[in-house]
Image (tube, rainbow, N blue to C red; front, side, top):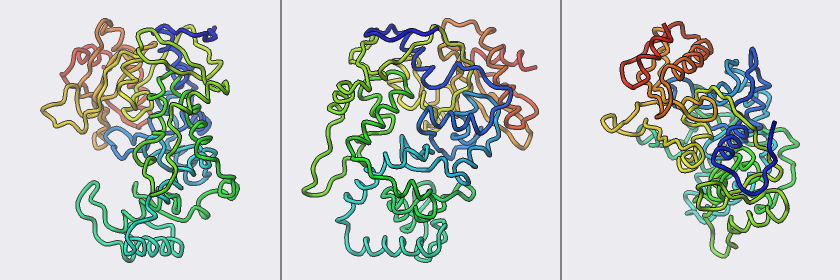
Length: 409
């Protein structure tokens, strides 16, 4: 049973609408497949990519969270072989459904215009890099003949890598694949289907509105600011302008037009100060019975303020926090039970010993530890099977550690 939204939403209704929109609470199949990866990508509109591999690469986790164990190679196949997904800047670096490519051409054009006035020497270098990719691609930054050396770990990129990344933002080169997680660049004509390359360019305002509707559909409910941040509409890299260029339309105006067009509906949410928006005609489930270990890079956790407003759950990924200042642990994943986040577990896949390690586990206030531990243990067993890990180890930290250890024996 579902309820058609009128004007006001209770906090519980907003929470259930968000969870259903994000794809949680559906019955998990006996064995998930590429079909479920497609469903995840279509529903969310973006699967964030991240190199952290403490447990599994971040982009593999959203499908597992929603559908359970599936062959991770299915995602790779949809991106690199079937070209049903492509890599570009959505929320961050993301895999996106290929049909969204025309909706992001305005962002690519913006980058071309914004950097049109770079110094002549820099422009000549970029053009030389582009010519080499055109002649030799697909290729990594390290394979450029004039790329130069990196200037340090992490973001200490070489001049060649910087040029390639800017060309990538401009849409002049595309990611054709990855080798040991390193991007391989090529020209779009050799990466994307011809129909995608030849598709009509969508005007910036219309493309932004389409992205806002997709974001609202994925989130379920959010303020204008919340929804705009899903695809980072008008983020700093979109606001770069060149002299004499007309300023882009304000995001608030786009929301007004979407409401007038009947594509979005403005609502009031219990306890929220600002107006919220939902997709017109959205239906709220009467209940949600979810069981999911959720990645720190899942859209449910992209924006901390939205997550706290909807779920009453204050979350921060602590991998970038100095060790002594961490509260819950290094790579902490929230556990979703029913219609709320019920616990946090600091996980690591120790592949040498084939062990899924829970360094720490914490139950949220007001919930029975034994009940939560039993549900979490079931999901951890499923995760261990998916990652081909044979045993468990539970550390002593956290008020859920002891009951969780008992359940996993």
